[in-house]
Amino acid sequence: MRMYKKLCILIILFVTISTPVQALEPPNIPMEFSLHGAGYGHGVGMSQMGARAMALAGNSPEQILKYFYKEVEVESLDDTKILRVNIGHLMENTRISTSSNGGEIQLFSSEVGDQVDVKPIAVLSSKSVLNFSLLGANVVPIVSVGKKTSAIAKSRSFTIRWSGTRYLDGVDTVISVNHSGATKKFRYGQIQVRSVKDKVLGYRLELTNSVRLSDEYLWGVSEMPSFWPTAALEAQAIASRTYALSKAGIYRAACNCDLYGEISDQMFLGYAKEIEPKYGAMWKAAVTRTSGLTVTQEGKPISAYFFSSSGGKTEVAVNAWGSERAYTQIVEDPGSLDSVLNPRFASWDRIITQAVVAAAFALPDVVTLEVISRNESGTVGKIIATSSTGLEITLRGETFRSRTKIPSAYFALVDVQN
Image (cartoon, rainbow, N blue to C red):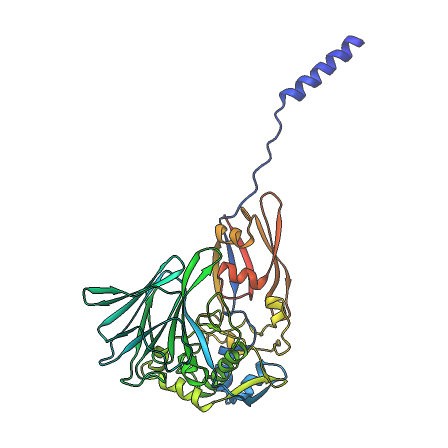
């Protein structure tokens, strides 16, 4: 009997040892994720496509603005203050010139503000080019005339003025600014070039254009097609003025500016917007007709957010960014879903790669994505990603939109493809 038990134990041990352990299958890591959505932008404030639809339906600029912003007034405020607008951020070099016949450019060492009794360190003709680069913490200007070049003493900052502005009489002059492979034209105010230290990149050039808000700045804002209906253009002009007034005087050291001239604040094209063939004059006229008109709450300009189009309803700031803004509200926005008015973004489909999604969540990989909450507006409230190791990270829908560069947070997950 004992021998039989020993034999059984040996057989069990042999079978146990000889049977291979089933290897765990690696998790299925999708190569891409498919999304279906509608709208373009953050959804907070005035829908530009909605404003267009309301204008076509006969609504006034004030009706449009009071529809999209909650409990506000449209009143006249002083908008003559000078804005410092960033037109070149974190640059290593830039080039400034003019092709205006008889135009004159003056260069000043340091920032001179509105002083009129300062003397320039150099005066350049229309055949000259100003090149700026960095040497340590200093800005180095080099003047080129044909094949001849001459260096000017370095400094932390410089100011550039040109003829035909309020600072310098003479021939009306348009300045060309070239950096990062693009050229923009500026007609008004003055330009500052300054060396600013970035935490990651070290010293970089910041380029700003100081212009009067009421006209010189607003004429160059390019946030809506100039051929759109008049009431929509005027609503946009008032919203852009309001947004700029809410930021004016709040200096940002990182950009040496009050506002960025990019979509992080408002797109500022400068003179190119004003001289758009056929339609540029329509935008300029809309700005002029609405002179001083501002969207206010308790007598102060609001941060008049606006965006291209929604998924059918607008969004509130707290859902998008986690910060409360009493004047933002959720309202119906059927114009955004009109495929005739909004052919590109009434609906859209996107495929996002594994690498982009993983980077958005700061994970090594993403096995599954799941929308775990949705806001009243229809935007994704929270979306959760799970990695192959079981780690879970949750993001706000708007954060996910921003990091993955999808058009909006009005989306649904369609499927996962291998």
